Image (cartoon, rainbow, N blue to C red; front, side):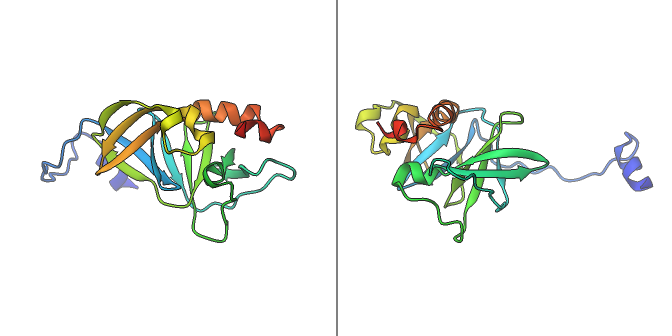
Length: 177
C-alpha cells in the first residue's frame, strides 16, 4: 500500500522513455453489419461489454434483445443485426455488445463482429439515404459518408435510431413502414 501512496507523490516518479507513436487527428469507432460499415457519430462514448448474458423480455419486438446488468445498471440491448436482416442474432454464437453513451442514457447494440477503430476518416459528403445500400430500417438514421481503411462508412445517428425504436416498441411493424 505504501508503494501506491508513494507512486502518487510528486517526489516519486518513474523515468520511462517517451516514444513517438502515430498521431491521429480523429479516432472513431465503427462496425460492420450485413456487409455495410457504420461509424458512430463523433464524440460518442462507447464501450465494448463482455459477452454478458442478455435477459429477454416476453412479448417484446424481435429487434429488442433484452437487458444486461452492466456495473449494477440495467441497460437495454437492441438486436441491430435484426434490423438489417430480419433474423434474430443467434445468442449461442459469438456476439459483442457495443454500449453507447454514459449512464443514465446507456444502450447496447448486439453485434456479430467485433467493432473497428477508424482513424482520420475522409468525409465524402451527405448520404442519400434512399440510394444507400443500407437496410431500409437504418436509412433514415444515416447522415454522412466517410472513406477509411479502403472502405466506405456511413455515419449512424444512434440516438435518433433509439428514439424511433422506443416509440415503436409497442408497434414494431411501424419501424419497417
